Length: 147
Image (cartoon, rainbow, N blue to C red; front, side, top):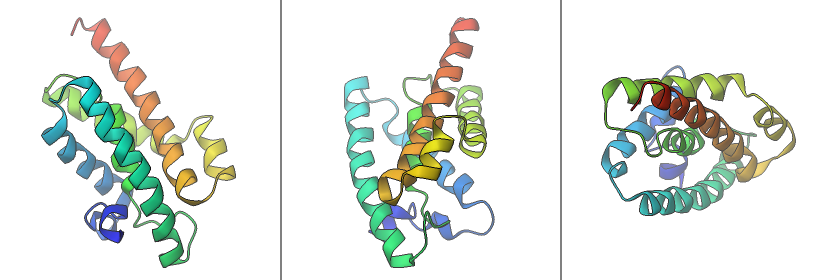
């Protein structure tokens, strides 16, 4: 459970555990990113359910609200940001940076979720919103560039 919640323990790496978790999300995307869209979304959906459970359990084990080592939320958010994008380094790096930007900025409703929802759902859901914002902006950029 802690293995999943901490993104294979990447959340314990020094400085910026969320960035390490997002990097793990990119690595996972490199493995599953070429799946059919419906299969990809099913994997992300299952990971969301498992992630909510594991994040909530890890919160109790660590005995802190939204503990820093828990990065399954960043992994899920990063996978959402990279949904249905081409395998191109510029696109992947852009998706990574956009997700980190929105994860840190927490625009509404992510900020509301972060303040008002607790437990595993609260830990994961604000990053889902950040992932959706990153995905929308990335898709817009891809369309404007004709990709």
